[in-house]
Length: 103
Ligand SMILES: [Zn+2]
Image (cartoon, rainbow, N blue to C red; front, side, top):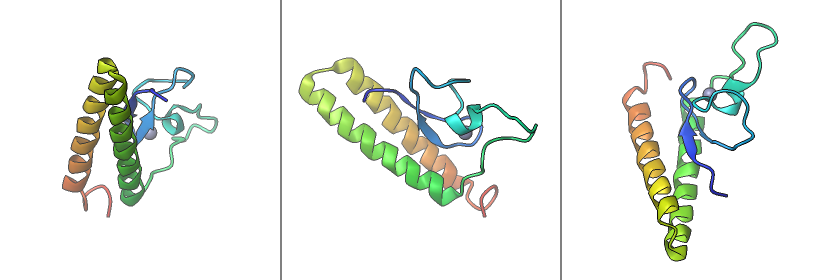
């Protein structure tokens, strides 16, 4: 598995960007799904859910980076390093706005 991990610009959740994913590359699958009733399709995840998903992706990226290092795949190592930084920044940003958007 070597798909890049992105942070959804609509709901803030990290997701794996697979080539088959429909919709915008900046939106997670839930936010990309077609809206049938005119209402936003994305469920608003709790801050705790988003944080635990970020932790999961940080662990995943770290493990995959270590694997890529063993294989000598420098471009994958660089991609995973970028993701880990992005996820850690997103976690800090989420912690900083705790209490405003998420109660
Ligand atoms: Zn989303």
